[in-house]
Image (cartoon, rainbow, N blue to C red):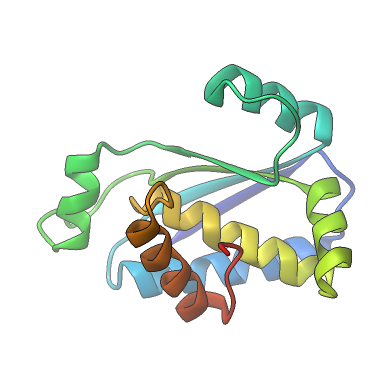
Amino acid sequence: MVVRIRSEDQLSVRHTRRLKRALKRMLSGLYPGLDLEVSVLLVCEREIERLNATYLHREGPTDVISFPQLSTEEIDQLRHGDLRSAETLGDIVICVPVARGQAAERGETLPEEMVLLAAHGLLHLAGYDHDTNERAAEMAAAERRMVGRSIIE
């Protein structure tokens, strides 16, 4: 498992290492025995707002955006063990200032919030979504299995 993290925000090395370890553990849990890569970019509000408008056609900042590199068919093949490896699962972009605010609102630490957002982004890369009540419940359950809580209400 390869996890690459690049930070445009001044996040501590300790927090970045914790995030990397958590993502490697989550990737291994989702796809045991497969060698996958995920890239994470930690950004400011202005950059996530630009990405949100450009790619999702939504206004304002958000906490996390995922950019899958695999097709739905390839993700299904990974889930069922028919595809044994893929170079890159995708990219996760996390807005550190938004994460910091959400952590304060939830009474969590920034590292805990970052791991939760990374789990949410990783699940999107793995084909999960919360566009229906049924799929939201499935994704929330997966988040709880991975990190013990969910951002989906």
